[in-house]
Structure formats: C-alpha cells, structure tokens
Image 1 (tube, rainbow, N blue to C red):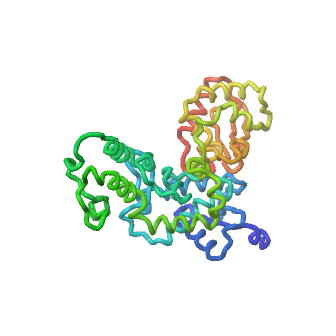
Image 2 (cartoon, one colour):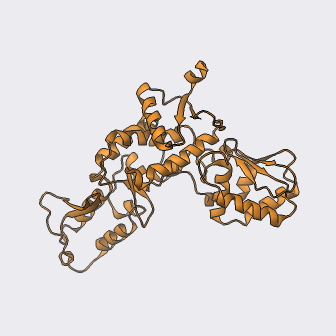
Image 3 (cartoon, one colour):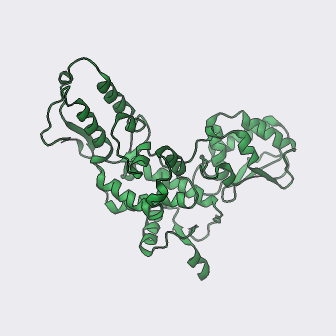
Length: 360
C-alpha cells in the first residue's frame, strides 16, 4: 500500500462535498509537488467504485459543472450563451482560482475531459492572445459582440448621437457598478469609435478579472506548461479540455470502439437491434447514452473513441429489469430483451433518468 501511494497522486473525495474536497486535495498535492503523479480517485470508506479510469471521467464531469455554477461564486454564466466566465464582482480568494486552473489542467494531464462551460476566449488567453475584437467574445457575449460589430461597421451617422462615454457597467452582489475605461471617460465620437470598441472588449474579457485569470493560468501551467499549450490553436485547446461534441462522432465510430461479453457478439439479434436504435437517436440521446456508459457525454480529442472503453455485457434473459452500467469499467449491462420495441423503451428509460455521481 505504501508503494501504491508513492506511485500515484491519490485524490480523496467526499461525496458530501465533492468540489470542496477535490480543491482541498489538489491544493495539498500542489504544495507537496505530487500533482504530476498519475491520478487515482478514492472515495470514503465503504465505496464500491474502483478507479480504472471511469471514476476519473465521472469526477471531472461532476466537478466541472459545479465549478462553473454561479452559486459557487467563482464564475458567472451568461443567460444567453450559457458560457461561464470569471465573476467580475467576485470576492473569492485568488488562491482558489489557481487551484481551479490546476484542476482543469489535471483532467487534460490524465487524459480526461472536464465539463466546464468556458468560452473560446479562455483558451485564447491561455495562449497569450488577448481578446481585441467583438468576434473574440461572441461565443461568451453574443448580443454585446453583435452590437459592437454593428457600431464598427456603420459607415454613416454620428457616433456621438449614441450618447455613450468610455464607461463600463457590470453586475456585483451589491448591484450594478460603473467604471471608467479611460482616465477621462471621454464621450464617444466617430474618431474614437474603434478605441471604444477595443476598450469595451478588454473590459468585458480581462480588465476587471485580471488577478483571477492570472491565478487560473498559474495553476494551469503547473501541469500544462506554455510549450505544450502552444502546440494547439484556441479552438483545438478548447476541444482538448472540454471534449468533442458527440455530433462530431459517427455512430459507426462508436460501434467500432465497442466490445462484447457474456454471450453477446456483433451478430447477436439484441446487438443488431441496439445499433439500429442508436442510429435513430437524436444528438441529445446519443450524448446521454455515452454518458450513461462512460460517465462523460463528450469524447476526448486526443485518442478519440479509441481511448474510450465501451463493453456491452449480457445481463441475463429477457426481463423487466432496466439496463444498468458500470461507469468505472465502461460497461453497459443489457438484458436479452425479446423485442426491439422493448429494448428501445427500456434503454431510453435508463439513459433519460440516470443522474448523480457514482455507479449507476
């Protein structure tokens, strides 16, 4: 056991407070410099999950969503885009953002994706590229980007008629707050229009959250140094961290990555029905199926489906039992249903009602 602990970074997780226990364990690993060891996740006494990779995938899915939840206080979620960005009214400690950056990097370092909802500009900034144009913030703030682009493309009219000054207003816990984007907060004119747009983009993205992003990047660099990060474009890095949408993956690729056990084979009638049903799923149900089996609804960019373990195992004869899964092992436990219609009904019931953190 002692040798095991020396070989791995053992991350102890409490199901009562998953995110706080993860951040606490990660901070300790950063201080002891054990963060670069291969990760093993361990829960409290009596847990039945064994970390063969599936537990990690499920953990990063859970903590990513919790981290971006506005109720946690570190990030705000835009109501229009549903993307998460550093809270401009945040009163949290800078240190927690450094640990958060290390958490996101830890997922990548261990070959997992993490269910964060960051916009493309996060990955631009990790690459040292500061947002400058409305296009750079459009997936975070679509309406703002659209309005700024419209202002920029206007070839006639007087910008001063808009009645704007170089001020930026944002929300805090105490209500709206307005700051000057330039020392003199000059009025908007045709001559300074492009300067106004550039200042606005900078304040919307970086200016007001600089200490938090800088801390996040320090944590990220603990596991993902710049020479590795810069191997990717911002779009590529976003997919490496957050995974590829299942819509980008064909069902045939998913089928090719699947193995069978306990009496099932590609030629078995239930398996033939299964893939016919999955081919007919919409994008949402395909994501739910992948999440039901592997604990993640996204596919790692590095390795793709070849790095995902999927096994369909016969789980007894026809019965009224629902399909279940062992996400630790990527196994779908599928009874040998007597008809395609029953298989589809039971499978949809399982994937649409499974939730929570742990074995299904």
